[in-house]
Amino acid sequence: MKTTFTTAEKWKQFAIILLPILVTQITLSAMTFFDTNMSGLYGPADLAGTAIGVSLWNPIQTGLSGILIAVTPIVSQLIGKQQKNRVSFYVMQALWFSLLLAILVIAAGFLFLKPILTGMSLEPRVHNVAFYYLTALAFGIIPFFGYAALRSFIDALGQTRISMMITLISLPINVLLNYVLIYGKWGFPELGGVGSGAATACTYWIVFITALVIVHRGGAFAEYGVFRKFHSISGAGWLELARIGTPMGFAIFFETAVFAAVTLLMSSFNTVTIAAHQAAINFASTLYMIPLSICMALTILVGYEIGAGRPKDAASYSRIGIGTAVSLSLAAAVVLLLWGDKVAGIYSHDPEVIAMIQQFLIYAIFFQISDAIATPIQGVLRGYKDVNPAFFLTFISYWIIGLPVGYMLAIWTDLGPYGYWIGLITGLAVGAATLLLRLWVVQRRFRSRDRVQGLNH
Image (cartoon, rainbow, N blue to C red; front, side):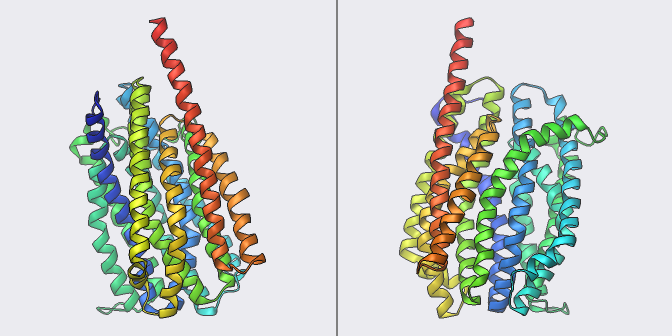
């Protein structure tokens, strides 16, 4: 990480941090894309079953791994303060904490997965695919959370290219495993949509072990000596991670869970509707990787500048990041308007499914513009360690406003499944507006504090 003085230097630093994160996030999203796409080509029931499985898993994996993102602002600020000797302690605590999270998720799945799926009244084939997809995926939960902790450390150092390379290596492995396990190639059993869950679990192990070796042996990480000294579980360390990470994780959970809730509510419609909805959500999730990557880059950059006592530079980075996200979202909107039919054709050969995907993608234009504002702002606020208000704002916007509006429109009007998407648009727009107001308050407070400190000196 380098100190910047001019706007041009900040753009360069922003690009250096952002681009590898963007490639990493798109690659991770591509894994879900290939799970969905290859399952969909196997059959509509497998696409629908995988959709239900992904919708149950995504809020859990993004929300709980979001708690581990606390490592990023903690380490970034420690580096900005030149307190590198404290870094290894927090990384080890995050790894211990990740193990606890994994065990809790596996236990919860064992107790509640069957009752949840049974309560959804799914078609038998869809039910079985969803259940065994998640059962296979469970074998990769421990390495998934472990990698989330290590990646947060790697990225906090500005070594985002390392995360990118690890993920790029894992993608072709994931696709190959999907191919042999979904379609039963080279003597492997033909598992259909369930095979994508097994492939993803194997990929998680490969990613985690690779990251573990790199952090232990990599030259850029040597001075931190993460595994040089054993750190046992620390209540104080866990409390610090939980204090910063829990609001972050729940804020992420509320956003991803509302999409999952809509998908689960869609189970009351037919298999074609479920499949089309999931395909459109999958593509929208791929577009979401752009503001999400900017969010992660801003957490690193803003955290570093705040740790070094430079709030003006932190504010400059926030303007660069949010402006970039909005500009790219408008470009994506043009793509969806002009080539929505081509996008829909990627996911299915069924004309009825393709037509419905196109309709959903029109609605996706509006909420991805709101995401381009709200998501980078959350990254900036995390850099300031201002995490609690975002937790409450996202909950109110998505669950008190967005989901009820969508439910009423879907049930009480002729909009049907499209009503849920209008609800999503409403909730995301409210979230973007309120988070923007919160950012203004926080930055004003830091400017005032900086002015007072300047007068005292």
